[in-house]
Length: 137
Image (cartoon, rainbow, N blue to C red):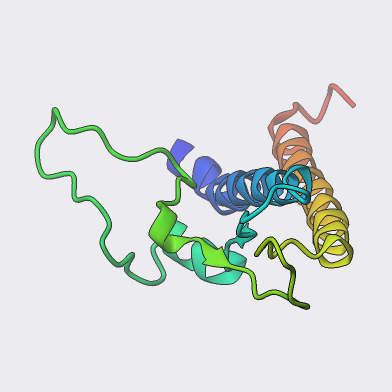
């Protein structure tokens, strides 16, 4: 019974973790807009979510084969799994941060992060309402 309750929240939890990681990357890109040679990074969110939920295999992922092995944190991405952004225009300092693109992606990701939080809150509230006694009203 408890597995059915947690399974419903696992997908949203993975999505929230990945949204948080993407927000951190986008904030890092914005913070380094003036750093010479900085390469903007991002993740393919749809692919990362499929990998996190087990829909597709993660290439090069660590395998936990013994009880004492430490599994990687949920949503943790290696550097090889992060994408480099293509430069919209050439810069003399080789910086690939496009502030318009980064701001738009940051705002879009923030809205989707908030939506994911609302889905989780709604699911918890619905579950708690279902567990209440009909006499409690």
